[in-house]
Image (cartoon, rainbow, N blue to C red):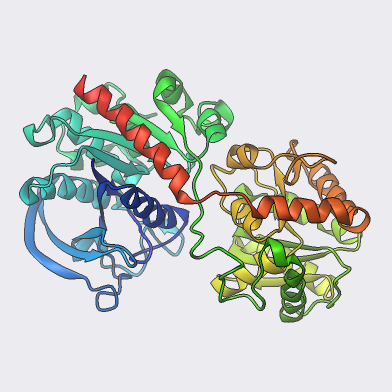
Length: 483
């Protein structure tokens, strides 16, 4: 099968969040199953041309955006560690900027133009290239216009091509003022009939929902949640109308990066058979973060964005009471200034119990997974969640709220079954109670704690299993196009 994977960011070419990791790992797993998959993304200033071996294809395309004609120059490279071809769409006006989507936290005003240009350039490029995909996997609102062009323009080149539109976070929908619709070059009836607008705004996510053959998201539970008023962010009714086409597949973990047996960023490598060595990482983490070095103290780790979605409001509310239980909390992340201030106060109040690093530090993140006894994810919503899957591999038991991918992967621990500590109500008391239960098991039931560690380390959440499900999804999309 020929598969085109279209994304606005892909590691190591460009990254702001988890989409970039998925867009790198999933195609590699699909390639290993024997399929011809290629990747395309914009060429941003952040892409290291020399290091990544990016070179021009010599192909330049004229792309009409509204009343303007813009040029797209196509570059190519290869995904490191594989022979997957990666194409990059260059246009200095749109993509040669300090940041990818925003400037100082505010969306670029021309994002509708930038990503409509990208979608149309991709659409035209493969006709010139003569490489005809069976399935195009689009990712988030930045790529959705490709699905519309596929259905509306009915280009003979793509007459047997199906589209899958993947949502990674329903909260981000690409909503723009109505006048931005003009950049699409399409008849106004597609705006007037509601296919591409919501409450008078040109909404690119809605384009994907209405024009893609299949809609996917990153966990089975999240596929249901996005069809509710609470987590549909105003477009739940569109997805309910297409409920049979909305499918959830849990993301995978790249175990070449996340594996305590091979991790070069941790102090002592270990496996389920040598789980006692995990303690050396705990001591190193405690020392690095300036908290008491003591194996008997339960250590709770967090690696996250410090925003409401991740439950940082209930974390900060519960923190004093949690620390009163005699545990330690280590936090790595960055986000809203108010949470920075709150957490700095907590660290200053409890210097031997709270470790804090505001920012991004990949080596420290891996040490937190390896050195913590528990991993906290009190998320308000969590489309998939990668943290709990990584923590499994490191034998670090998760404490999570039952939502999205967390609900699909973490089952509450009892004497016989389960793999973590789960709470349902989104509140500080409910979170505190789950943490209290975890701490109690650590202190008073070492046998259960150790058995759980060994069980979760044996899980296989590699991308291979997810990739097979994506292939089935692509076949379903193709059946709709070719029946």
